[in-house]
Image (cartoon, rainbow, N blue to C red; front, side):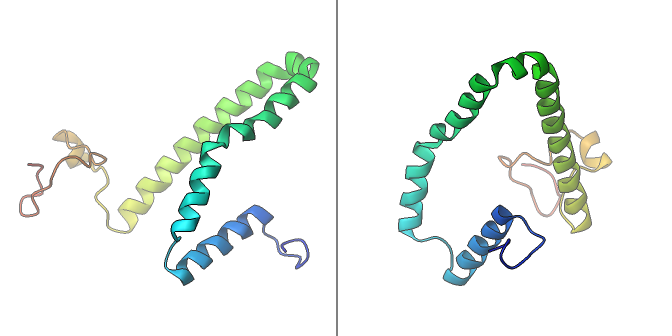
Length: 126
């Protein structure tokens, strides 16, 4: 669909947007969707077979370029986690959330601790 309509969006992204729109229109996934998702998740390990076959098939390339590939994977993962964390904190502060502030950090308040109840009058954990 993305290719046929010459959209500047990758097919998987367009599919995800269509799925979200479908869920919004239908009021969320139904029981059948949950059952289907459970079956797919129970067989998720099968999706790693092509990657393992690729490593075996290109073993010599992996031996020579493996350290660079591993460094790129770990570096990009760390960068993605850092950017996601900073984007979350920015959005949380920008849109009025209760992200970590120097005052909260100084008194030991953990903004990501969801197990404590906050007293709305004092703002302190009980």
